[in-house]
Length: 350
Image (cartoon, rainbow, N blue to C red; front, side, top):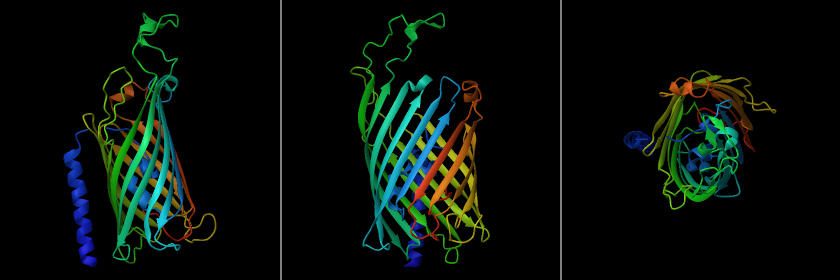
């Protein structure tokens, strides 16, 4: 049984890699700390949390330029067990909210709600865990009613007395969204006496219903399908130190692709499960966003909470349009952890 499950897991990982490589033709904006915004990343991640968990992210990008963008998300996951005990995790449900404002003063804004359900099961005494999730939600896109239009500019100067050329443009539009996801983790409890490494592999497909998001009367602007692959390993170094590579590929049909590749490390600062700071790790990550920029992240984490900070530095020609500004991001997660000794499933833990 053990040999079968290892072969099955390896085959599934290979299928994920191969399939995504064939489907990447295209780009969706992602959180740099995508691993801290699990429901925003993949609905199947609702099925792998062992405790009630609340995650949040705040991202500020190019804040001093006219192309500024601020994105936030808040989500909660409730695990589902087969019995009143904590054994037999069978999935979870999740709720998430997000907002995204771009342009001067957040003239363009999105607000969305997502509900997720995932079914999960373990094999080989939970050395392998699989989760399959679905997500449905609602998004509203809006333009600030006081936004400035090109027709209100004369020789580069804004004249509020001129009539804006916004005939046939709606201030807001709403639509539904439907997403699917799958996730596999190996050695999720990170028992390195049993297995010398741990890892995960996941895929999510978003906007399957291809909603029309056009803000113009009788216009058509269908959201493209988004395919995301995320995977990583954690290699056991010493009792206190572990490290490993991770990757995120986000492919948006017809728009290009985003690839984040990096390495993360964690150092166990406090090596006992007792007290508020029990089993606390220091976290460090470095990422390269292919063709665009680099990301540095630091954090602190234990079974109860995780706090992370990251900064994006633009290295492409986009830096000519954002005054050289990057993006910073803060994430915070809190969990109602019953077992303080259990380590998190994901890599990295911020």
